[in-house]
Image (cartoon, rainbow, N blue to C red; front, side):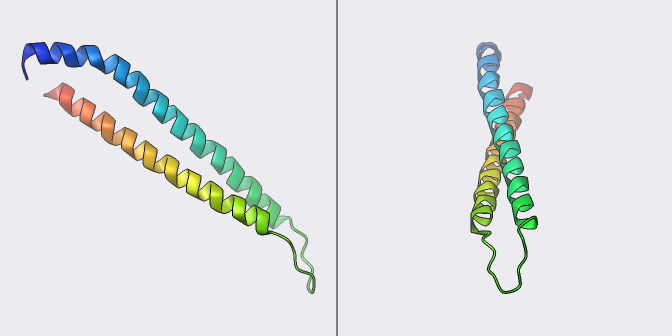
Amino acid sequence: MSSDAKVWLSAAVPGGMDKITGINTTALDGAQTNLRKLHEAARQIASAPAHRAEPVEVVEPLVAMIEAQHAIEVSAVVLRRVNDTLDSVLEALRS
């Protein structure tokens, strides 16, 4: 890599890092929020009254759990992509 390219790369990294950090923070916040939703739905299911002959309505908490699970999986994919991007940036800086 030429010295001009290294100077340009080092000048571009702070702005790019801000964007990567923002995406990382958003993904982590999303995972934490949905973990709380998952916990709350599990609590609702666990505390549902149990009656032998009467059906207990737990559909809404189950749907909430599935939604939270999918959102957590998406957050994990975003975090994995951020990690890959940071690895690429660090590799470029090492070159």
